[in-house]
Length: 486
Image 1 (tube, helix red, strand yellow):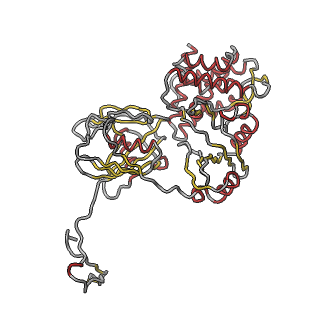
Image 2 (cartoon, one colour):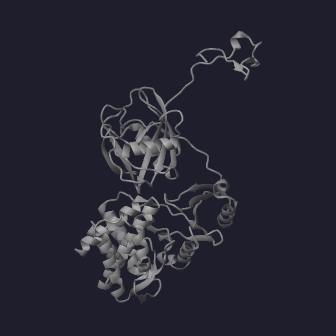
Image 3 (cartoon, one colour):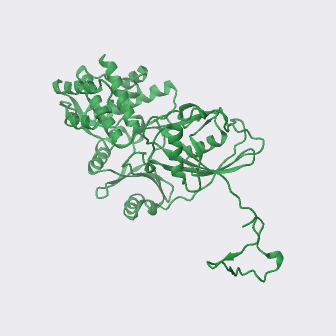
């Protein structure tokens, strides 16, 4: 149809059909001007804990010299936005992303200072294959990981606005700039970001009738349920809100073992920490492997930016919490050899994934466990790392996610948290100051062997399930163990 032409309708024969306006006055005759069309672009929010990957534009391109998320336009009329963001990731970063690992984050309409409109689709990805690199050096001069809570200032204003909206939990927004606005983000400039309110999804539509019935029996009528799962396979967690405005977490465990561990820990051991230091179990359903726990406010410490004195206070408080957990039942003495049963199976699964000397190191440290005398065993958290710690506004530390809690070697709770103080001895000292004692020489040797087994397990699991963070953490632990052995 030509711009400004009359509207006609034709059947399959090509003859003109009635529009219902044949006898209308001429001034009411339908006309149509050129339709509004605007580009669609895709943006990749590549997550590594509390950090996001940004690239610095270079060359003869828009906003050259400024930081931006990896992004681009759709490649033709038949490319969808998910395919587009996967293609851009491979072209710009040299990484492979599976479609099932792409999560919708935000859609935002943007108007540039020049008056051009575009619609941007932002997607979150936390699992990929390969190591991000500069695959298009003529268009990118730098790659870097930046804290998502404090994005850098030297960013494209449009990109930063999208990142801020995503960070604050919005899923739709407008970013309408005026002619005098700069392309770069201006901290002192007017705020052009306008988040759009969205309807909360119906809790029953999200959870299904059985889970919703269980949750409502525990906390009353629901008005909303938001997916709060980790970006990892098998994680099923929702933040649910009640009619009165309260919030809880509803979790469905991957298997019966995890369910029994977490529910048992909440009932037996968590009370020893005090109500302010952990969620409280509200209800459990063993048939659905589901549990409802109270929601605790606070920032997640995985990727958090804190001052060094604050970090030391956090580690001291963590040591105190762990001592309370470890001492809530009388300890027993036993050999720490449980992980050896999976050694050969995990070794076979990591064929080609270990670096030179790592297999020998793992075997040597693991076999030493068989010669060590018994060490203290008791209640342990089982997955003590920063992602399972919250810090509230009153500097109260909250320990979450108890599905790996069980009786085991007490020092095994130091395995993953030790990775965070490898280059921060003051934090390590603060932790053991709070814990009230240092580990014995036998416990120290057991810790090395258990850490080697945990690293091996993480590498094989991460490689099999597309989780590069687990793989990297395993190699980082082995590198630390090698330095300690030297």
